[in-house]
Image (cartoon, rainbow, N blue to C red; front, side, top):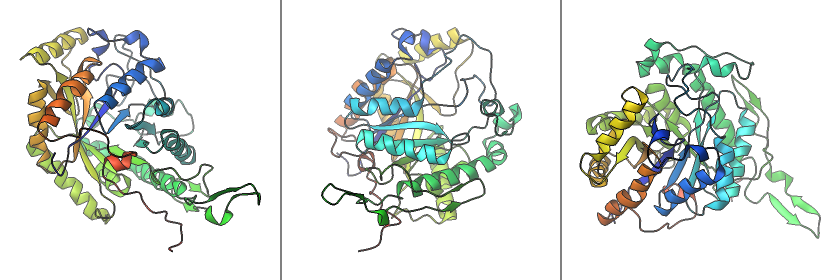
Length: 403
């Protein structure tokens, strides 16, 4: 195997990323909202030795338009809470990382930090979190405490325009991540004494107020949950433009980018590097892993993946497009693409199955063996934590006194 093995993750989204995937052969739309359905998908991903799975979520119903609701009834609508789902799956898995999407615009950072810390305890060190802002004005109406800017059709055609309009939400999200990280450190690793003879359960000197004061909220702390097994659970973000790149550079461990070709991958990675330099991050002490997102339709037979996508397009009434590149081909051809793109400096890929279970099992049972045969993927899990799988150190506690 290469000294720099490829990292692979899967983004789980209902019955797949194609809007008509619920109507495809082998789909199980009737089981979509059952725990067993998700347990089977994650078990399959773990059998493929993948690094982690992500779970999509949002504070509003899905929509064909990213910035406003729609009235369509021919596409999947509804979802389970991603964080609670991940907590349910934690004891059913042993090695794979669990990374739920959690909204930060309408969620208090204290509750969020406690939830992710609890997931890390439940999974014994395999928790992550994808903080997501909520730019849809309609979503704010579910909470009634604030409004958010209404994006227009013109806005969404330009990622930089979206980033500019949403800069205040990203600034708030940056503070949310900082608060969560401080709360995770508010208990030192050895704060719990549990000495029945003396009656001391905790060492109060090793619990810390974080005393965060920012433009959006003030949080005193400490957390109610002891420090997570990883110290700091993984934080990952999806980024398409300058402001999101800077958000990732400031507070994330992993950034998901969306190039459409090898040249685009190099260009985006250069912009991520610029953002890292701009915020003054020391990547030697705190590495930022870079993953490219790829939507995949995989079949062994030449042309079969293209035809399958075209059938789904016909069912949906329009050609499926995505913010990420759409790959249709064989597992071997996808392996060629991934290994070629990796030379740009990517650490790994987050694959979005077009339809599940078909494209998920094609990843785990066709793509992974192909990569392994080329010496580019692991043959077994060799560490117990998600940070360990990605080669990330366990951070020291910022409040602990140096020995």
